[in-house]
Length: 363
Image (spheres, rainbow, N blue to C red):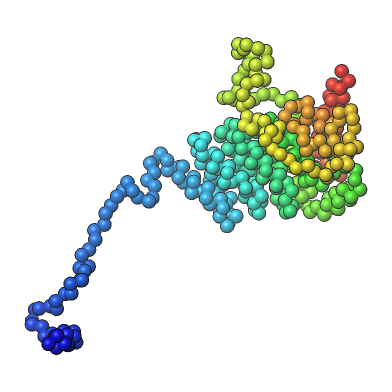
């Protein structure tokens, strides 16, 4: 009896049921109704896109343009830099982002992009005083990289950025990076600091292989060198700013109070290398052994000395850089042309420094 019932149930699965007109098949027990239509729910406050107010439209547009500074097209990068220069914001908080995303263009492959960045950097310095002092370290790192770049056209425009720095922020440049920048300048010009025969031979071969554009760029290099030496070796008039304090009109508890106040520039004690452990180098060990005992600086001392004060910079220049500067500048002056004129102007600055330093030493 049971077997007949099971057979009937199995047979029922393979039988087609006859339906009456207007009737549908019976739906199984596990049927899920999917005929409904979901309604869209609008949540403006939870939208993925950021809703920006009207007065912040310029900021968002500037952020978009900053991303285009990494565009593959050199023409686009140049146009973006020109647009940013013409639409600089008034908010100081955005300038950090501007410099962070554009400072790498110092070593851009396109000369027009590099020139556009130099113009943008000068415009930012005029718009926000004190900006270059805050970001001097990162800018100098890229500039020194450009000065020793493998491509000659990138090296040719590297001093354009330095000229902006020495015009807009001379104190921060010479106090923190005088020695390193001057040594990089010697490398840029294929000058030597020693009388080593191998170094002289390498410098001669490098100079003879310079193309026309690099030789024309020497005029700009020498113009920067003149301004750089003026700012580093001579007293400069202090430019008044919103953060400067005239201590002569202030009542202080001690005459030396200004010397012990918090410094106005950032990373004021970075040249002291208080938290930096440097590995010993044997490259200049021979010069350290041959260094004079009368307190004169040598090339070995340049790795350790700080150029924070002017007296140290003047002594370093007199002991290490003076003779090579006069020798190389004289050779360029003899060539004549625009480079010879600039070299003659720079020699006048060097001679004036030598006369002042010698006179001060004899007193």
